[in-house]
Image (cartoon, rainbow, N blue to C red):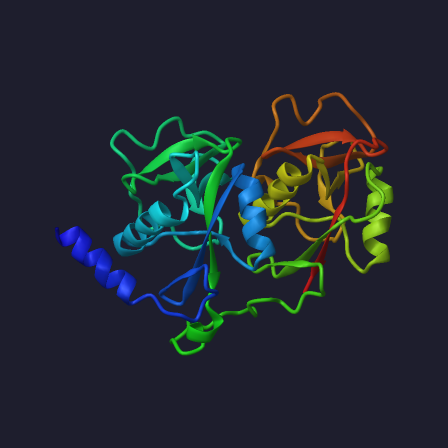
Amino acid sequence: MLYFIFLFLLIQNVGADCLPNETEWHSHCYSFYNISKGFADAELKCNQHGGHLASIHDGFTNALLAQEAKQKLLNSTEANFWIGATTLIELKSWNWTDGTNFDFNQWNKGEPQNISSSSCSAVSVAEGYWTTQDCFMSKSFVCETPNFFTATLLPTTPSSYPLNGNCSMGWFYIPQAHACYGANGGNHYLSWNAAQNYCESIGATLPSIHSFAEVQYLYSLISAFWRNLWTGIFSVDGGKIWKNADGTPADFLKYGTWCEGHPFKNVSGERCAAIFRPCYVDFDCTSTIFDATCKKSL
């Protein structure tokens, strides 16, 4: 009984500053999508609307989203829906796609199970508990975006970087990297040098990787468009020393691992790294089986 009284009070406090089909709570707008997508595709859909899959930091928010899902996902064929909890960003560790602290969970009994490099969390529509799911499964999902009207009325924590980074139209800002990312809208399947030349022609470079958020973004592109991507990581001595095209330190192994069998041994000359699923691969730089995405550091 207290649970339903609590939910009633929550819903009474939901504001009207979000769009009519959204739910407002604590300066955020929540949008439920009754369409089935894999986790990365769902995250990319949220990104396109200026947000992320929802992160949950207290039982109040979890209860509200579970209750709202019963109404807004009423016709869904899925028993649960994606939120932004995943092990894709950091191997064997749960993180939120929006980069906030993973300081709350509502795991079902016996969960989380089978933690791997491709585990994601979904919330049960019936009970509100979380379960571990294969990220490639298709599910309904809930996105979270800032409610800019109410957010401006609340105290904020000072940040070193602006929220949008002043990226140009068509570029996606990643605060953790303080950089703008743009996908290649033209020719596909380029050699590493051709991809780097393309990026340089628009004032950017192939991406160096200095955060888990960048790995997550690149992985989202791969999952959405089924194209594996060159990074700005290269070697001129057969992989003994790796460098970044933008001249920054090559610390990419802090944020991911080589795929099984990579890097190749007993090779010489120029080698270049691409991102393939949630791991890195080492290839001949003249290979034309990878696409380009570009990075502009601010």
